[in-house]
Image (cartoon, rainbow, N blue to C red; front, side, top):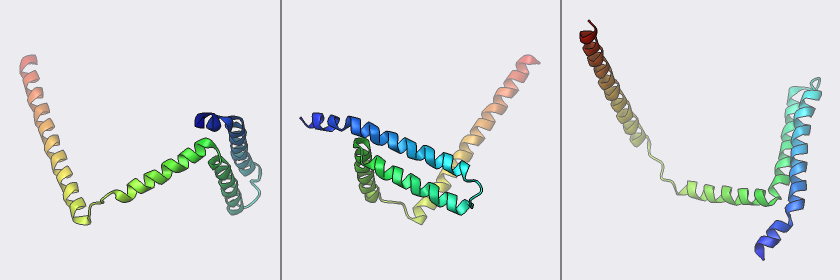
Length: 122
């Protein structure tokens, strides 16, 4: 029953997405058409039209799902324990040391293989 109610807004959602696309096209074409207007005013106009398109998009089923996903992602992001400056510095130095060691090993293997090939070739 709930899926039928969710699917009922399909035609209206499609119309809303057409409005969103039309608004974005208007923003792009309007920005190109009004080249004689100052850049600041064109940027403000484009931002305003994009915000209106975003508001219309958020009223669709996918928009509501995206908004719910955004809220859940933000909640999870607040749960992350970020490393402090000391931990970050130590980890960065460790990565640099490992990269240098691997580079040195690859260089030595390359020199050894080149030497062995030189012995066989002549």
